[in-house]
Length: 305
Image: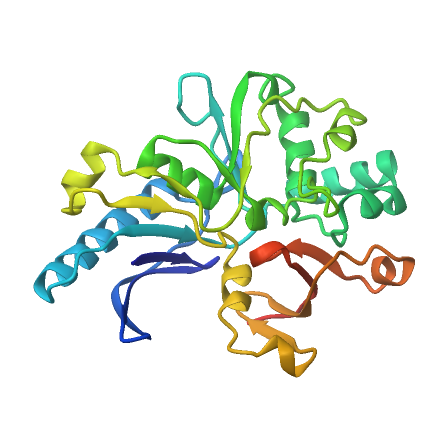
């Protein structure tokens, strides 16, 4: 199995081999990436990311062939909240902004004034931060009121990369849950929250759980990376923290446990069966994001590295 793991500053492509009940890992490619400051704001270098991902998959497929393995799938996980908008022609409708873009601060203040903290937390269970996808969406709509209306798909960064790998547009649940646009009770889009702000919702597509096969690699992609016949893209827990938490080697039968995941952000929390949407959770603040197997990642963003 091939894994493309993208943090907010670096990326890597890993080969995972399961033999005799044990998992071994081989690093095929590692690279740095950073947002680019353009006249329109801070944007991710998507073409640079894509080039390195293809180079990494190519190196991973070559390593597999050399060692007698045949990779069956590739999946991508990334940092949260950032997204791309795709037009009816299948192309990017805009250059996706990075969550660190200062324009999000103004949109965040507007969002608080329009919806209010209590209602927004009750509907989404996500802590208040200007970096969230919802303030970013408000900022995009303010910059170009026609942009959302002419967009066919809203895809978070790992969803976009799965789309480029396969040509199939799906939204994975754990990454969508970082957006502040998901109802944690149902796992579906909080369309009423967006409609109350006069934001279009037609671009919010099908949400799929971790472990979903998106589709076979596009022929041009498969040829470039030297993929074996039948190799597919299958989404992991596409938010990197969700994948990290799923990998923690704990026995739930031994009682409750918590985690501290340290990267660009540090995240401390617990894995729960249901969201916590109390006043105390809102004021602390804690966030409720989706995990693997229907769990909730109840956590707090704190200072990172």
